[in-house]
Image (cartoon, rainbow, N blue to C red; front, side, top):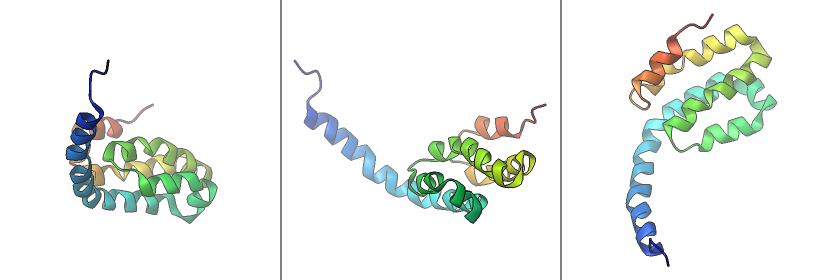
Length: 111
């Protein structure tokens, strides 16, 4: 016996899905462009799958957590210190899209 009818599940996701994504795309485009600019041509050449994923990620949290991979790619190009600095400079574009606690935690210098 099914607990949830497929039509009910599909109708709920239809209500929440498209409208939320359309609004988010306008807010995410500046973040996406900033991350791709930091990645640059050399980083995109080293990791084309990251460039492709950055272009098509559909929410701010996915983009936020992709910063770690961005640091890894940039470390190969520029060195770790400069890579971390460049990725940390992206934090202001995430303002209002991810919880403030995440942004604040990224500012903490680790020794």
